[in-house]
Image (cartoon, rainbow, N blue to C red; front, side, top):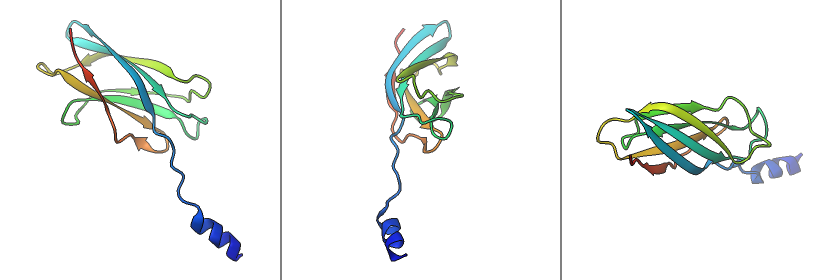
Amino acid sequence: MKHIFLLLALAGPAIAEPVEINDVRVTASGDSWRFDVTVTHPDTGWDHYADGWQIEDAEGNVLGLRVLAHPHVNEQPFTRSLSSVIIPKGTSEVFVRARCSVDGWNEDTTAVLLTN
């Protein structure tokens, strides 16, 4: 029994890999923008998968959210798009933040320069 306690004491929390943003492509379309975001995550199935990404301004305000509705275990990396994102006038840079179903939102963001 004391061996079980020793093993439990030595076992630290499992630290999963965050969702990695591999690429972000943006396209202006009139007054709105389209974001094509490529991500990688070691999805294991419905219990742990990349489940979204969002576009934020410099203050952290959410400008757009793309929900990823299912795991992509055998499709890595993968790209998903979000259209009709309204960016406030005068904004030249936004940030993309990804999330997974277990660990939540990544601390890190990926900066994206907006050019027409």
